[in-house]
Figure 1 (tube, one colour):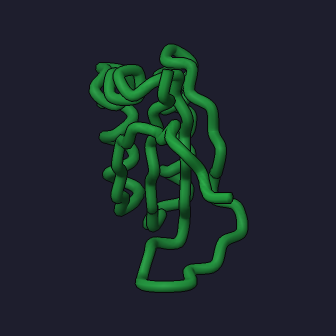
Figure 2: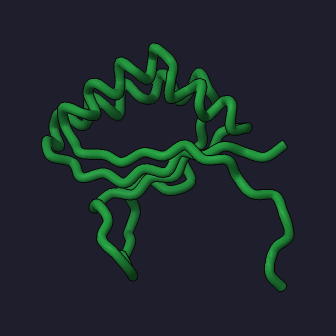
Length: 101
């Protein structure tokens, strides 16, 4: 089964309030089995312009990734996110086809 992912690019505008978002999103992420693959570690933009913080979250499948984003638990967290940051979030299906080489 192909996994689902959230990919987010975030500029935090209120770091103290953003902590509330992190605490709130943990409820939805635990419920839907989310797993952080990237969570705002070091990064270097090599082309284009992106926000400062990058996050990649893995789910068991695309349907679960969507369900988490659309859940009441995450909607409550997203209100806190939107008050403390500017974010671009995409929910995508993983790839399980041929690889180079």
